[in-house]
Length: 94
Image (tube, rainbow, N blue to C red; front, side, top):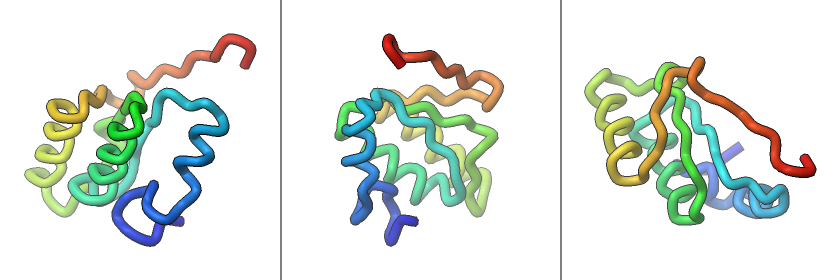
């Protein structure tokens, strides 16, 4: 559970992702223009690849949702795809 807007703030998510040597984070959730966006910003600052299934996020309005998706794509270089477009691959030795 996260106490504020970002999944990284005051949580052990960053430590966990480092421990498992994650390189990519798939983000879903509500308040795309707040919680998902802020978590994406923190992930970007940590050098993680970001994937956002566009049909797995929501906001109070379509305008807010589109704004968030656009910001994540343009500024954070997130890959915005429908959930069917999310592909997982195994790591070598994983």
